[in-house]
Amino acid sequence: MFDYVVISTDRNNFTLIFLIKKLGIDTVERLFRAGYIKLSIKSAIIITGTGRQMENGEIDESVIYEQPPIVGGTLSDEDLDFEKNIYHGLSHSIWAKDRSVN
Image 1: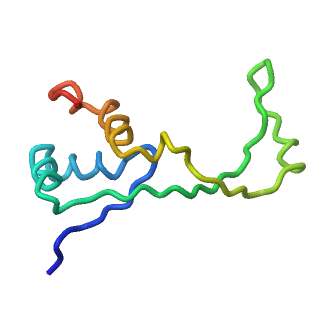
Image 2 (image 1 turned 60 degrees about the vertical axis):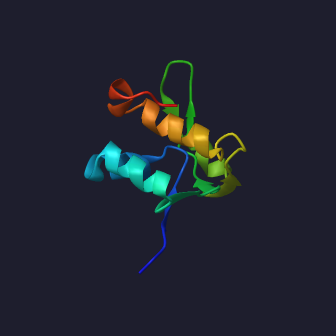
């Protein structure tokens, strides 16, 4: 029905970790190598402030009233690099211990 599937991910690449958990790393690797799965990294981000951390460790929430409630931005070029994104996602997982992440 489809030639390939494009999976949308972000800087942390939890989507890839989810795929590996559900399908297994060997199956996911085989699907990527065959071209059946491709990644799309979302570059736009929306953030909001939660306050400013003071020296004593507490959060001063009063500063959020002086800021816009929602701010838009984009990821850096380094965050959009597919190889670094995949490496970052896999380096914090249990699969990095079993297999080389190259």
